[in-house]
Length: 454
Image (cartoon, rainbow, N blue to C red; front, side, top):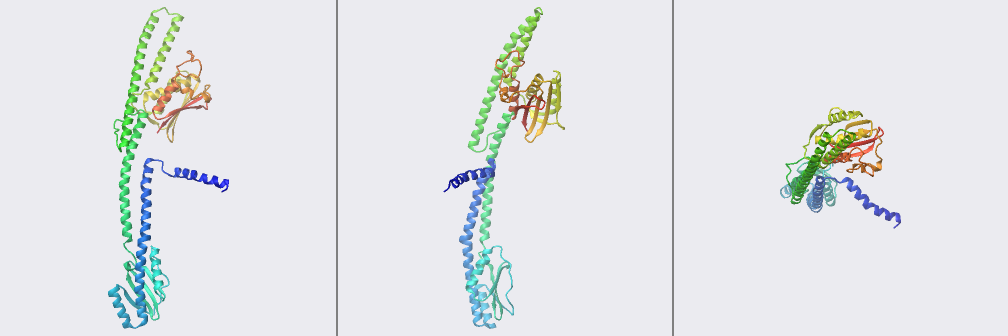
C-alpha cells in the first residue's frame, strides 16, 4: 500500500465522525428519539424483508405453481378432445374441485398488453409458473378483478379463458402481517416517546432552574422530577443553591456590619472636624473622610451585588436616558442611540442601573464625549458605552475587570475610584446571564459592550 493510500485510510474514520456529528441532532430529545426510532425502523425493515423473502414469496411461488399445474391439466385435457361436451365436463370438474371458471372465447386472440401489479413479484412468480407448465401462448392479469386472476391460453379454436380466485395464486394475508407489525411498532414507539419526553422534560426544567438561578431569578415552583438520577442531580442543585445563597447572605451581613462599625468613627471624625476651625488642613481631612466613605460604599456594593433584588421588566431606553442626564451633569457631552419602540428586558433594576452608571461614569471620567447605544440582536440585547478618552490597550482589557485594578503598579490613592467599577459591572452582567467585553471605540477611546440574552 502506498503512503498516500495509507493516509487516505486514516482520514476516512475522522471524516465520517465529523460527518455524523454535523448530521446527528444535538439535543438530548433528538438523540433519544434517534436511539429509539432507528433500531425499531431497522428491525421492522429486517423483519419485513425476511417475511417477504422467506415466507410470502415462497408461499406465493407454491400457490402459483399449483395453479399453473391445474391450468395445464385443463388445457391439455381440452387439447386432447376440443369438443363442446369435453369442455363442459372439464369446466364442471374444475368448478367443483378447483374453484376454476373455464370458458372458450371462439375466434378471439390474446390481448396485446396488461396492467402490471403493484407487487411486481406476483406477476413474475405467476409468469414463471405458467411458462414452465404451458406450451401454448398465454396471457394473464392480476389487476383486472380485485379478487380474481384472469388467465387466457391461446388455442386453435380461440382463447381458453380461466378465472381463478386470487388466493389460489397469491398469499393474500401478507399485508395483514405487515399492518399488524406497523401498528405494533407505532404503538411501542409512541409509548417510548412519551416516557422519553417526560425524562427529557425533567432535565429541561433542571436546566431552566439553573439558568434562572444564574440570572438571579428565584424559581420557587421547581421540584425534582424524572428518573432517580435526574432527581438526585436536581436535589444536589437545590442544596448547592441554598449553600451559595447562605454564603452570599453571610458575606453581605459581614460587610454590612464592617461598614456600620467603620461609619461610627467616621461620623465622630466628621463631627470633630465640623466643630474645629476651618482651615486648609481640616478641608483636606474632610476630603479624605469623603474618599474613605466612598470606598466603604464601593466595597459593600461589590460584596452585596444587589443579590436580594427581584427581577422585573425594565425599559432600557428610558434607563439609558436617565443615566445620560446624570452624566451630563459631570460636564460630558452625551449621545443616546436607542431604537423605537422601547426595548424591554427582565433585569434587577438597581443592580443593572448601577452597572450602567459605573460604565458611563468611567467613560465620562476618561473622556469628554460619551455615547450610550442600545440595539436588539439575534441573541438578545446589546448596550454599548463609548468614550473618546485614551482607551485601554488590548493586552490589558481583561486585567481591567479584576477587582481593585486600576491598571497601575502602585495603586496610587490619588487615582479616582477604588478599581471596582468594571468588576461590579461584569458581575452584574454575568448574574443576568450575559457578559461585558471591551473593545476600541469609533470615538477614539474605549467601548464597553453589555450583552444580555433575549
